Image (tube, rainbow, N blue to C red; front, side, top):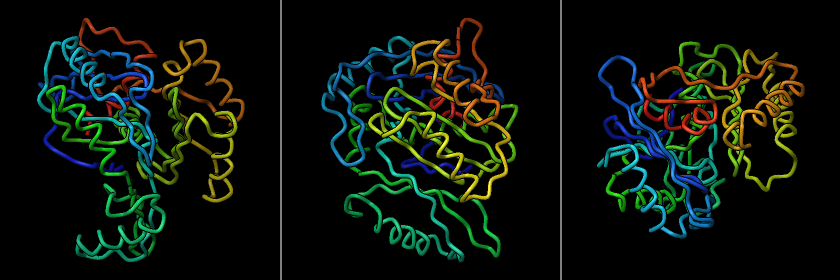
Length: 314
């Protein structure tokens, strides 16, 4: 899958995540063919310091976020000047736009995408940050595009927090899009139609892919009606009824152990989803990176760092 990026640069060695309750970071060494995680850590944030939202200010206490990032950089033993940054899914709107004919000129494609996005954006298109990448090819030469829209000033809040801690965020992406990258970057790349369920304490995101092509994306905040299992069941019904799905080759659950405080609760959710979907549900173990000899990683940490691992596999 070609993941849209708000901004891009050469590959950094540190990835940072900013969430409502904490900041996270991992550091990798790239000496060989597979990146090796050499350090990781997280720092809690005061309640209310970050309130991820699509159409409102997000960072109420920039000093607290910057201070947590500086402490985090000290913990991983490195003060980076450049980082890749994962931001909450709920600050962006992800759409799949289908074009039967794709213009040859990039500027014409950009105008077509902006025209389509303008219809659904909950804010002025002039205030939007738009990123897009090619999705599934269509019969006859057309193509879908994965489009991410955010408010430019909201993205800037997260960048500014990193800058206040001494680091430029040159690659910025939504967390779940990079969880997809982590899943696709492993030794057992998913094939056929598969479902990703990424849960955090603030939101849940569901994505259906065919191999590496995104077919469906849905993100819901913690205030959404219905429980997670019910939302996943609705997604599976949409897959069967609207996408002509015949069954998932794999269901991948990410974040449950971290979001629900422990392996036992994570396993309970996995079993619950397996019963609803009548399919095996696997926890993600990102194996597209290695871990240093003294790096201890359990499932909760895999859940926490999967978006950052995906960022550094880009």
